[in-house]
Structure formats: C-alpha cells, structure tokens
Amino acid sequence: MLIDGIKTFVKGLPATMNEKRGVYSFEAVVAERKAFLSKKKLTYCAKFRVDDDVKELRFTEMLKESGSGVSGGDAGTGFKKESYRTGTGPRQGSIEEQSKLFGAHYSYTFDFSRVRAFIENETVKAGYTFSYQITPRGL
Figure 1 (cartoon, rainbow, N blue to C red):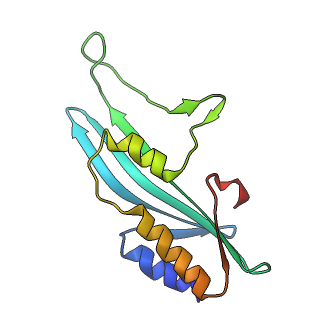
Figure 2: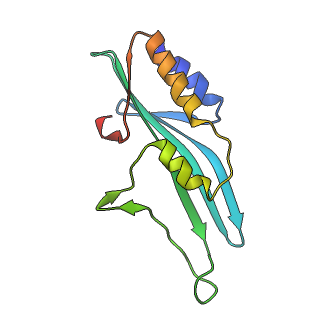
Figure 3: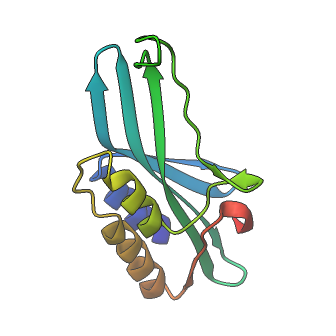
C-alpha cells in the first residue's frame, strides 16, 4: 500500500509520521545551533493527503526555524524573538528558496529533494497522480 511504503521511508530519516483527519505529516530536525544560553533548530516539515476518489496525492513541504534563549542585544543581553513575514501573510515560497535563506545561518546536508522524489515515485507506482503544492491549503 502507498502509505505503508512512505511510513517505512520516513522511519529512516529519522522522523515519525502522524495522521490527523486524513492529512499525514512528519518532521525531521535538519540542523541545530547552540550558543551561550540560546538554541536554534531547523526542521524539515512535510504534509500530504491521499485522495482515493481521484487517485491523487497532494504534497507540501517547508523548512521551519525555531529558537529560544537569551541573545545579545543593545545592552548586551536580552530575549530575542524572530519571525519571518513578507507583506500581510506568512513567508511563503518553494523549499529551494527557504533552503538558500537558511543556508546562510546553518550548515546541513539534508537532501529534501530525495524525500519528495521518493514520495512522488511511490505515488506514480501506485497509480496515483502526484500534486506538489507550495501552500498546505489544498490538503
């Protein structure tokens, strides 16, 4: 079955796949940066939904950065919270664009295109159509 093959692949990342209301998701930590009293983490996130009626798998992926701790400010110490926004909504774009943005801050070798290619190949082998989406709204 399509889902079973994807679950086996995801276990090798290492990541755990979850399902909620027909949407499957998994996350894998790609990189971490630790500094004095602060920690940042870069996570690869993927979601997909299988629509058996039209034999289609809709897939989306992104890189997510989270951090906590104390960082240097104007006075030398302070808490820092960062968010990335463009215009009125959250930052959007292809994972390639996100990877270039985060590549300046992190060193990692995670090949996200391998994940997408595997899921696409398994989808086609099962006789389904693979649909890549930048935003997860259609899931």
